[in-house]
Length: 138
Image (tube, rainbow, N blue to C red):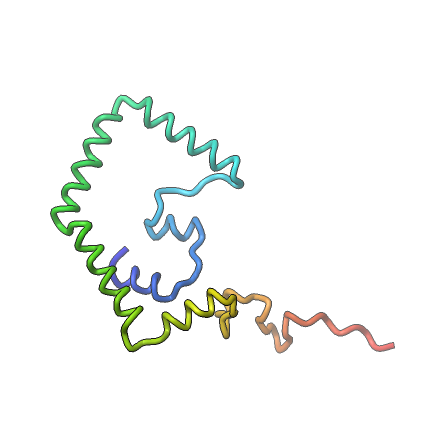
């Protein structure tokens, strides 16, 4: 994904659908049209993995990949970075975290929503699409 894209994703804090998450590499796949379809597919995948003759090799590859990742940057380093960011949020000079927390706790809506998310507020061809069409004069 890259650091710049990850930063944009986390700082913009906009919703990401399943297809978008797959395209970004955040998830391996998306499937099913409802909960039942999803659970059935997950069960198929799990049974297929467990019955696979490559199961042991797959686990060994996963362990080796995790060990390489840990050597490159241990999980403790990620934790330390996250704690540093949290410390800045809690005790730094920028009050935006506390404002956002207060608004969340007290269910205060955002001042605005980006128009591509707030489709009900779009204006089309000079007419506010949120308003009903004018009724004919009598």
